[in-house]
Length: 304
Length: 243
Image (cartoon, rainbow over all chains, first blue to last red; front, side, top):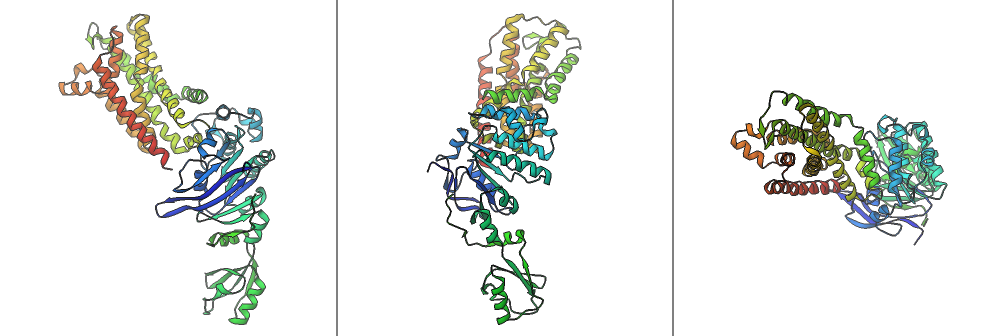
């Protein structure tokens, strides 16, 4: 019990008729680095808002380190980097870092924070004079200045170029090396793959897959079997062996399948085809397939 | 909370617009208005030069207090206040600190216009009355700080700016901060007496004359303070329940 950092139970949040978060259950062990992966609109930011106590769920409960989120935040156990969080105008990097240090009960030394975020050279700069990547690293510095046990990062690398992204992940890496719990949301599969030890895939406010990156990759993997529609029947395609989803676009049928051989054999045996092509599903496409499926796929019943 | 207060004050000191509105504008306006030969005139129970000094000090103070309160709107829109809410700083302390910073932003105006009065018109009040004037014109900005926060928490930046400007202009002109109410038609004069701006300046006029505040003046200020507190509380609650 005590090694649980985050526990979400049946969390639901509606906006009008839309269930942004729909019965979300999630338990995150201390010391793990978890990626919340999903397309835009999957409910990642809403889930994070609920988790941090910035928003109230319609039903369900959140607990951080065994207590309500507001209490955990008050106790200085949580640091967060929110999506598009702005700054008070005209403050400098050092000023916001010092503010964060003063607000948290046990603070990291300013120099260490600046070094960790790669901002040592920029300490005296005003925040509105920083580049996008530097501003994002300043947000990171603000979030980790109080040495929080749980660091929550909402789309930390959105709007960063490749170099800034690498510098950013290097900084996160240094932080997690100390055994802190990190939860970050992203819609980049490769980021989840590379930097998390557990990936939770979210779609339409629900967990559709949950497991170590390798397993998620395997789940999302598969192949695409495509051929010309050519007037042939479309019904029943989803019942072919291995087929996970059926898409028809521009006169071609694309089947995403877990077992391309079986699918092709069945196709050949039942209805024939024209212009057949079998390709490895691109990661992004496969990921879309995964998140489009309404059923829950739990890679393993892992309790991290 | 002290760290946040320090952080906010440092930012305040760095804001050049604030200096322009709360120091330069009222001082220049005062020098122009008071230079038209008011010798011997008496307004609001004090020399005209003193009455104008208090009015314009109040004008600058209200400008500063309202604009700092309104700037909360931008901090909200930028996500900065949301970011603060995921730190251990309790929300109520953030609001109290902000309100305090608001009221403090009115002080430079009172000091600057006071100095201008002293230098230009040799206004002599004695240390006690100067101190009372400064103290009351600081404390008296509380209702305006609350109005500014209500605007800042309640409206988007696009709306907050014009609403702030209209509120400021309406209250300061109708409250007799720029043109003394002695020159107003009687209907407007009665209106002025019900406004917080007039009653705020009255604190200054009375202390310059060595008198204590009037009960009716305090009652009017207290009523506006209550109303603006309710408005600010409502706006604040609304701002934290929506995204």
